[in-house]
Structure formats: structure tokens, C-alpha cells
Amino acid sequence: MPELLDLAERIVGWADEGEQVEAVVVHERETEVRAYEGEVESLISAESQGVGVRVVRDGRQGFAYAGTLDSDALAEVLAEARDNLTFATPDEHCALAEPDGVKPAELDLYRATLVDHPTEAKVALALDLERRTRAADPRISGVESADYSDSISESAVATTTGILATGRETGCFLSSYALAEQDGETQTGFGFSLGREPSDLDVEEAAADAAERSTRMLGAVKPPSGRMTVVLDPWVSAQFLGIVGGTLSGEAVQKGRSLFADRLGEDVAAPLLTLVDDPTDPAAHTATGSDGEGLATRRNVLMADGRLERFVHNSETARRAGTVSTGSAVRGYSSTPGVGVRAVSVAGGDCPPAELIAAIDDGLLVQGVTGLHSGVNAVSGDFSTGAEGLRIRGGALAEPVREFTIASTIQKMLLDVLAIGDDVRWLPMRAAGVTLVIGELTVSGV
Image (cartoon, rainbow, N blue to C red; front, top):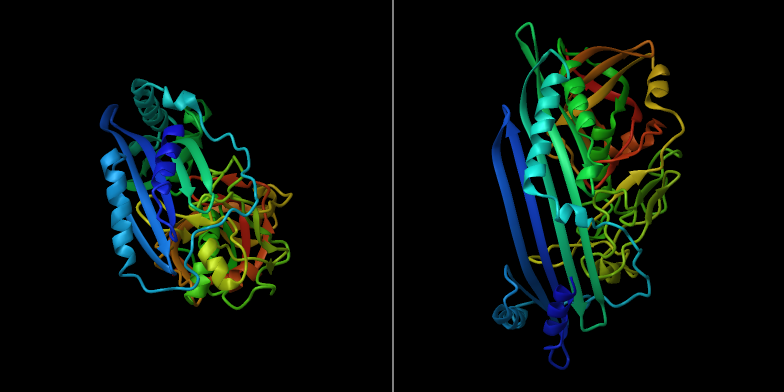
């Protein structure tokens, strides 16, 4: 990693008088193994590296990148960025980030044991996952896929404004998709496990979850249409909360693409809901110490007790809004900084999921959704998605149901949160999941 920072500083050192220069250097390695019918169906090992350079002068910005770290390419990328600047439109808010005095959190996100883990052992994990999934239940007729994947990422940012930042993270992931069959009917279900190094992974848990989620859907029927209480399981609620977090980007607000654009300081959710974006939580799959501009990431409270407290910003959107960056710049080396949440979660409740379900006389537990992103309008808040899950009758889980739609608006769903479970769990996405009870959603079945 010192080598990456040396490269970034070298480029910044070539800045001419009167211009700001930023260099982002990234090196990534990834491995993916897929097992199928007791054999390795595919094995992919990839390595990528690159540099992105921004040049700002007189309110104009030029950007260029290259997928190589060869010395000859560094000067060429800087020259190309300078050339691109001449075509840019002046913008008074265009400038590089300035150091803001926030110290990066000391996060333990890198495991040398993953770097040194042999490929044979990674293959063995995928094969073991498939074997255990098949053996988890006699109704499991096959495994659609059993995958192991990992990533090793190192990065550095340097600017003429005085920012020097480095970061490195490792992560690995197991996922299994089981096929359950009974009386000629087939259902699918998945399970997963994630961690920073292979020893964090729980093969048995991933296999058991895949088997359970597939077998419990056997015999599923369409539920009756109507309005009823809906329980989102952690996998589904994480996707929902990720969408909510995306609407709280300062960039989305300024471009008129957020349903919360004019609601800062208002009550927008149930009082029991507090929503936080915290990339400094090492348990988060997407945790990181620095954002895409090299500023320290930080814990940002987005909603507190239902009140909308904050939008997230990079340095440019912050200047437009007359505020300061929240350390929320997101980007790769091949792009300029955008804005986004990284690790969204809600404050968990004090009741386990079983107790929440026991309090519901008639409702639905949703364990999977389809077409979520296409069925959600971030400007109007309209929400409609296909779903599957289990009926809730008299406080107990009942028959499986599928091929139905749940619909409402994001605004109403947030206000109708009735209860939050104690099972907050980080998932392989930018949000943590939790059992979330929402009242009065429209269910369209039969």
C-alpha cells in the first residue's frame, strides 16, 4: 500500500501553479469459485489496478483514468485530464475536497490470512457448501449454485489540497441456492455467510438456511388480496432500507430525484425508527475508513426517532448546500466522486422475531421480493414489488404463499413501522437487515 500512495503523491507533485490535482490509485484482487454436482464448474481469479486523476482550475474540472499503474501511463493520464478540462463548463462549486480535521477511525478490515489462503482451500469450501446443502433435507433435489468469493482491495488518495489517505479491506462470502422438490413442485431458497477471512465463514449455517428457505415454500399458494400487516425478514428489509438510504443523497436531492428533498427536519417515519449510515462499523460488509475523496468516513444519523436529520454529501454537493461533507463520496478509480450511503442500519428493538410474529393475528412474512428496484420510484415514493413468504395466523407462521404483490409508498411504510426486531444483521450489501413489522400494506393475490 505505501507503493500506491507513492504513486498518487508523484502525480500530485506534477501539478502546475494555479491548479488542483487529485490522484486515486486502486489495486484489487478477486476470486470466485462455483461448485456444481460435486465438481468445480468455474474458477475465476482476477486482478485489476488503475489510476484516476482529476484536475481543477478556474472552476473547471477535467478527469481521466487508466487501467494500469505503469510509470509511463501516469503522466499521460494527467495530461489527458488537463486536456479534458478545456471542454468543461465553469462551476463555482467545483473544487477538490479540503482536509476537515476529522481523523479516520482505526478499523481492522484487513486479514493477511485471506491473502495467503490457498486456492485449493477456497475450492474445498465451495464443494463442502454444495455437499452440505444437498444433505440438509431429503427434499433438496439439487443445488443451483454453491459459490465462494473473496476480494482484497487497496487504495490511496492524494491531493494538492493536502489530503493523503490509504485503505485496505478484505472480505469473503459463501452463498448457496437450493432446489427443493415435492410432488412435482420445485422451490428455491438461498443461504449465505460472510466475513473478513475464511475462518469467519459458517458453511453449515449457509447450507441450512438455503435448505430451510426453499423447503418451507413447498406447497405455496396465492394469498387473498387485501390490506394486512406485513413483516419484512432481514434480507428484504436490508434491500428496502438501502433504497431509503439512496434517497437521502445530497446529489439526488439537488437533482430533484429524492422524495425527501424538502423535508429536512420533519417527522418522516415512526418515532421508533432511527436510521444511521456508519461506514466506521467494522461489522459492516462495506466498512471503510476513508471516502472516495480521501476524507474520513463517519457515523451519520439520517433519521432520529422518525425525524429526518441529514442528507449525505461529498465536498461538492456540500458546497452547493452550504454545509460540509459527511465523508460520503463514493467512486472507483474510473469515475469522479458521487454521493451515497455505505452502511445503513436501523437501531434494533428489544424483541426477537418470534415475539413480533406472535403479536400478529393475521399477516404476511415476506422472505423474498422480485423487481424491487424497478418497482420503486425514488421521486414519488411509489412502492410495488412481487413477493413470496408465509402467512401469519394467530401469531404463528402458517402456509407458504407466492405470486403476490405488496404495494404502498415509501413515505407510508416508514410511518407505519410498528415494531423492529432485535436481530440486526449485516448482509453482503450496503445495508443491515432486521425483522421489520409494517402495518397496512396492500396485498394483491387472488
